[in-house]
Length: 321
Image (cartoon, rainbow, N blue to C red; front, side):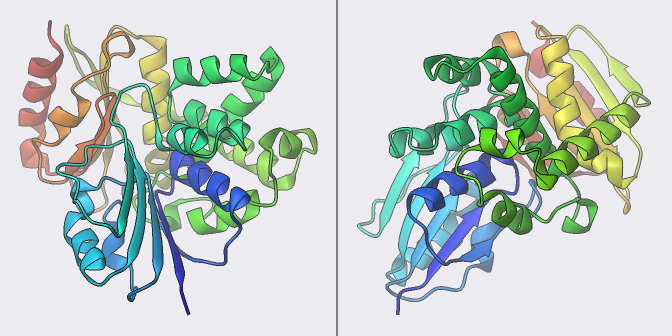
């Protein structure tokens, strides 16, 4: 019997990409996911010849070894992503849809793949992934009202925010649980109009944490931009990425980094390139052992205290014109 395994990032882009696929093609599957920064997900996949693995919104480069092992075992793999991929294997068992352009995300790629069947989920994901221009363009093409766009933006940001944390215990909803709750709705605007419990809780949780983010400490300011530090608290780990997006939107000519203190010492790092010149975040973060991401937004899972001064110097060098 063929088994289906769905592997997806626990943020808005990964969840909404899988929502579109499973609404179009309902399938009982094993879900493999985690917090947004938990990207080496293919290491956890147990599959045999003939099984089908779908991988969404996690870097192929960071999962290359287990991917090659699955392909060698004659496992069928569909892989869709917008992060740095490295060399893409040429294998009959692999169908890949990879685009690393700064103005796209996995849910937008899946929306194209499905010819717009569940486009409002793609729009919500694009807003959540801070692809504001792409989200607005697609929303305008669908003839959405200003109110509907604002609703999808708020929802996408709240779903994305829910994925941030050092562990699943930090999150309000485990990503696999959230996916199952949202799968009941083919259109997020239907869920919003009903004021469904999951929707109101997501929004309330996000708003409460964002209020606390205003107490962040400004660590460094230069011609490149600003670096902030958040405390070692669950709310701070949850809000780090979406607050970084908010900072980037408020000051689009500057780069930003949000460092969140980790329980074991060191920092969880979120980097946002200037909105008006969205490049280099991935290059900056990949200079550090646990770093990765995409051109406009990237991160470092664990920056040792001893590396902080080097990070600040690299940040300034990357973004000082």
